[in-house]
Length: 385
Image (cartoon, rainbow, N blue to C red; front, side, top):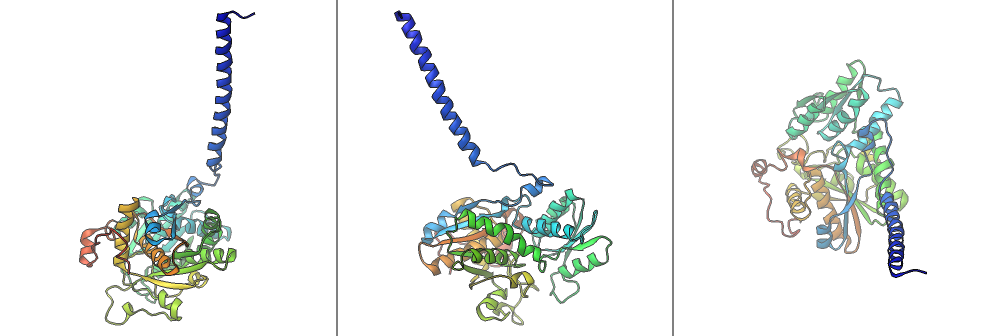
């Protein structure tokens, strides 16, 4: 028979055991639930390869609220090289090695506005390859600084037409041909560019949206991103609309709309640059690449430099997003498509890279003032025409 003290001890022990049991069950559930939230360990040849892809999809709520659509963005600056070009660089290198075009201790040559070169330099270094990069000297200086820190040899050259042997891509191709062990990455024409997005970015977008997507919007430089993603998404659902957003001075808008490569900004006597007459970098072009020709595009819209500048300021203030010029152009395009399609649609675009590699130009008040492109007040989206 239990006395009073034994009875108290019994309830203390019973209560402690019960509490420990239920605490253990709860913690076990927490552990199981927590474990399920994390991805399995990625095993690749190098750490940098393991970090490429599977980037987050986020809703830009300030844009969604203003448009009445759901504006989603694939955040590619979380790749280890800081841009969407990591996917392309890895595919190009792996394919070249598989085909025997890139040998051990070889040198990769590439012509780039900066981001692809950075990705190539970062990924190739632990694999034992060297990088020789040619880039136009009107691109942000910080890009070539990064390239040099990554061990690449960088040549900044005047921006000239693609028909000129001194054009940056032509110089890279010539260098590869005259260098033992040289390999020309050729991102503009290399199908590995398109395949990188068909095999990874497109499937990720489809999975992250559960297939609930009405439109995809992107700008184009090499054409690989919009081509690979558009083809994949339309294979999954032909009703998905794909829109090109093209910066001023680029001819791709008229190619999609009218079947001809021409833009008013490019007519004789009006250009201020030898390339696309825009302060945006890495997008816009006045020739058709093999990658772009693979794209399945429904329509095209224009984006201006001032709209891109204002958009970069808008999402910085509203979302804390510090983005580059191509990313800003993509968001401008997403808003224009949302207005065109009407409320209730889900629209996906790409945030290509971070604003840190655009400090000396796109985010430089003095430079913007010289181009009469200082941002205005961005309380709403009234800055988008």
